[in-house]
Image (tube, rainbow, N blue to C red; front, side, top):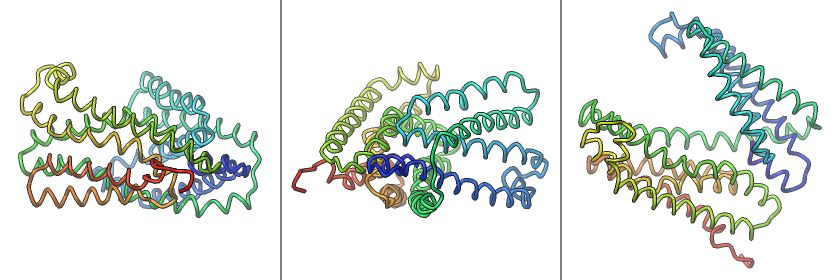
Length: 348
């Protein structure tokens, strides 16, 4: 959504609101169909998820929360595409910060917590949605044109999302089989630290996706080249400095975080955190890939990296080396896909 809204703004086509309408239509249809499935087969779904039909009583708050969350994400994505980041942040502060905290204080049980949080976020989201609709001009026939574009763009990226989740989950799963639950816990904790290294640059990526999409619409590749090189330099700087700091001061950092720390955890986390030389680069630069291509090349990078990890692990049975090499593969592939933007010349 942010990509196509920003792209239409760059083209000055006046279609950014039609992209939003197309997104809203897709969301309504998906929620309606999923709602039917959920209410017909809810008993079986909740039994598969939780092993007890007792939890089917949470079906209504679950569905309300899902609707609220997705409408909230739709609006947040609209604000990102329109480069209205203050509005996007205010929405997140209210929905993800203030509302859950207030409802938690006054709820008597989990059911009320779940239900009232969902209803409150839904009310806020619908209110914002109402103001967007009354302030915007829409053309339904043009909006329909964007539906297949949005679906194809999003669907191509789903395999990459699942592959990335697998890449970050498999090390702990393999560790549990090889070294037991305690080692698996240490690996999982270290992976969470690795993920945090990516979050340092993630906010920049949130801005760069719509910004570069808009510049692509304007065909201003000189400015894109400038932004991409600066983003790459920043991500490499974060990756190098963050990794070196952790390798030098891991015991002190973990002691501040956890208190008394097992030396085995320090050893494992230092091995996994070599991956922080590469992971922030991928997190920062994937937004550029998504802005530049409608095809899901990020999915290609992540799936290839997952294959590298699994292949290396079964060859060496070394979780840590396999993970670091797979993350290096992912970042190199990401940079490869945007090499034209990094080395842009007027005559290219």
